[in-house]
Length: 324
Ligand code: GUN
Image (cartoon, rainbow, N blue to C red):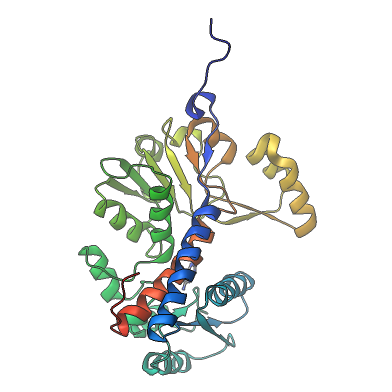
């Protein structure tokens, strides 16, 4: 009889971590190196203009991270923080001034915007060549036509995460739960481009679990705490959790995290809440082979891909020929 039998993670029922932090660090290192080479060979330093309206604390943290990371990688950045009462016309005037400035390569308007502002009008006013979020219709259209373009950061980061963990996309059955313009739809396009068979599910999908349970790659982007449970997941699947939800209730944290709950409860006591994704962590880990943690998963990749897009915009809009 053998002394010990090596069980795979799948057999032990403990999902491995799809480590967004590691892949984000890799991408940032690559961008930093290329930014330095660009400066050395062509004297260009890319510049990102980040625009934030109002004082939503989450948006302030996100934009702060984006600006700080830019500086860390050698990308110049500008933080335009505008009052919540600003009019649509004033915001459009700022966007236009950034469009025409030759030294600005990337423009990011943090969402959501206050109710008096027409979000679509603002996003559509950004020069597509500087649209580092990939939200302008020209870039959305190019993505759906499989043309090279600026791709939305979160979906692009998820693809990198899967590829760099050698999770096969070609031929896989991928299921995206959530049909937002920021994540679900562009991610479905990227998976399809890589030869996955893709289904998009949403709030009107009938018998959701019967669909998601077929998926080799399951993406949860719905914004509901712990919504994807064991019954939704195929044994051995890779589960990517895009959700970022606040949980303040200790009993809820206990139910979600089981034996790992103590650290979360400490966080709730210290900060008032803990961050939880759209996937039920304890149940998912019994079934999936891979799962992204929250926090520390997809969110870090979004910022890394924004840096990559800013570098790409700087190179392409300036017509720089450079072989890295
Ligand atoms: N709000 C939430 N996610 C995003 C994003 O990726 N880009 C922008 N601009 N706003 C967001």
